Length: 312
Image (cartoon, rainbow, N blue to C red):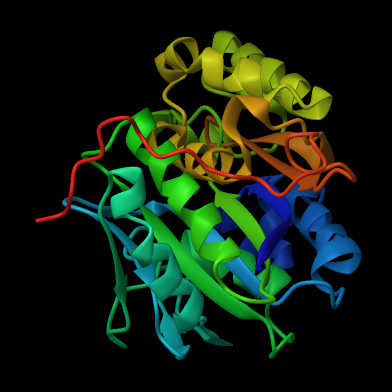
């Protein structure tokens, strides 16, 4: 039986892969702690040998009619970002995938009333919400498998929770698999306008787009540190007013896999809560509690919806 052994809500902002001199210039001569935080997270978590596969829940990859999970044996190439090609240009990547796990996740779509397709096309695009974190957490660890699942832009909160439930079941159905989940994306996510943006490139949270957005982010960071995933989930309507990245679907998929409101895992923070041209960024890591993600001491089970709809 496979298991989820750790999970994180991690920032992937382009500045983390800029040359150090450029980062210091943007941040008033100081290193951004999103960089130092990822380095520490790698040392403490990703360089260990107690996991096999990383599943990235990628807020930049938006599908339309179904969820898609990558199923290639290996992904390798050069990545240039269509959004910021000056800063993310011809970045090499090379890592094994996990097609067995991908197919098992796909297999649980019907149970949870959703649509999931595993795709092994070698030309499938890859996005920097995956690449930037792999550069820090996966590069140089050649035996670790990496898989990506995108958000679905026509889905809502329930759809993404259903994906998470199917993800948990797919992991459980993969014998011996030990998996880390990464919800790759920001908290509040409103940029400064172009003509003002360069006045707000430093990491100090004073540059977050509004004080109210900063307060909403910090409130949720506090809840995560207390293990109160129920409060985060129960107040999504309020948080959506501050436009979290991808409607916070990256986190919602992870929450669906960890037990949703029943999840009691407490976050530890790597680096500081920082600004990125108006958006709220943080690295939070959740170790699996000794008595399980939901505090019951039992393997997590997922519940199918009352009225599942079958795929055509």
